[in-house]
Amino acid sequence: MTNPAVDQLDQLSREELLSLVRHLLVVVEQQQARIVELEAEIAKLRQPPANSSNSSQPPARDQKTNSPSHQKHKKHGPPFGHPRAVSILVFSTL
Image (cartoon, rainbow, N blue to C red; front, side, top):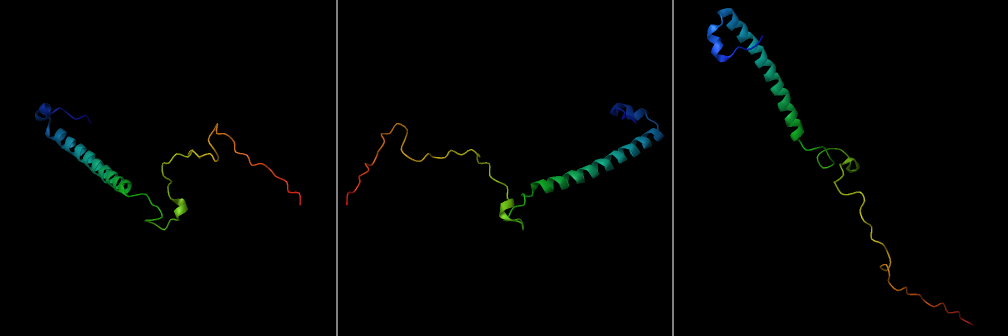
């Protein structure tokens, strides 16, 4: 059933008005059910995710932070171009 415009409601018969009201009541019930579903989903999404501090989950299962996985590692030794220090090997003649 198509919904008539507001200015056309005066021209509808009693049976047509009752049919329209029944149809709109069904639509309202469907929308109320959908609202209840969506509110439950919103409540679930607002809860913090389970981790080792708020559940019995072990710490190894916690979500990792958004730190970059390719962290720069500092090179050991003198900087590039630095003069090399060499110890002289001395043999003992005892």
